[in-house]
Amino acid sequence: MNTITKTVTFFGSCAANSSLVLSSSRISSPFTVRTIKASFALNTNRLLQLKFFISPDPSCPTTGEPTGFNILEEYGQVSYIVGDDEQKVLDHNAESQTFPKWLKVYAVNSDGFEHTVDVQITIELSDKG
Image (cartoon, rainbow, N blue to C red; front, side, top):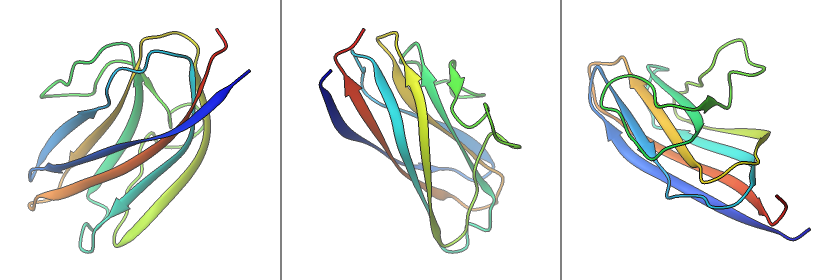
């Protein structure tokens, strides 16, 4: 089995008291999510929640969560991460054996100020299937 490691980057701004969905390009082979890195700027004050999805479609709803599987929901007490002036690194093993799929970041900003979403998800593509 051959594997290739790729980093999928997400960057955007989530307006005050709103939500935002960022989507990857189409992933057309089986893959495993290996690492999620999320950077939180100073004074984010844990008011920006980030959720990570493996989704069956490219849609980015303007309200509510995207379709698909929340990667953090399977084992965590909560299905999101928050932070302030830090980078969180999450090692993972979420697999997707069906394709095409899209990775998505869902941000919920409950602050009165706009916040930046800065995420890198490392995946391992495989030729098994």
